[in-house]
Length: 276
Image (cartoon, rainbow, N blue to C red; front, side):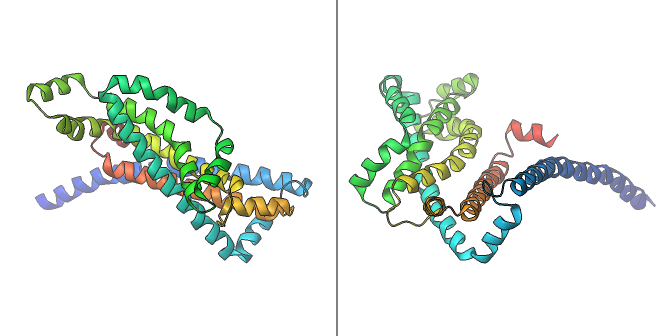
């Protein structure tokens, strides 16, 4: 009898949790689905009355269905340019942020240069990169890295300096080395900021890759090159099909970062607040 009562209590406690989880899933998925549906409906209505400005949703879907290999290959090329370029740019930005956070004179010397790099139009430097590095992937990697460098640098600096002063005093009292402070205190404290920056920078690197393909197409056949070729031929269906693929790719990259953040930062207070 006791076991039955215990099982009944556990079932009673588990039932509200299942209800809360179902309600949470509804709250997560229903709003974006409704918003997406409204956008699709508005697009379709506008396209029906303006066929020479934008294609209809079925036309875009048919374009993707009839030529899947073309868009799949273009997506892989653009994804390669964006991910490799962004990875290099974010790694360089983080290493520079580590140096700046410990050597303030280095920050005063290099931060103005980083600002200048950030405000320089990417299109303006693309031709020079092509002349210097040729028509291969290297200019695309550089442009994708440059476009994410500054936002990741700023977030890294803020994250590295977000450590609890009292905890830092404990490390100092224990005579922790520079590396131990960085690895065991500053890096864990900066992870929420780094993931927030990655959620911005990875989709942003897709823009850098597409801009690079616009300005320095060369031998690559990514989605940017496909958009430019289709626009020159007035093929609106191919243009917007490529844009849809780019949007889905950006959403996928953001989703991957969110999943990694939830997996790696389940110890952080922001995760506790989300789970309540």
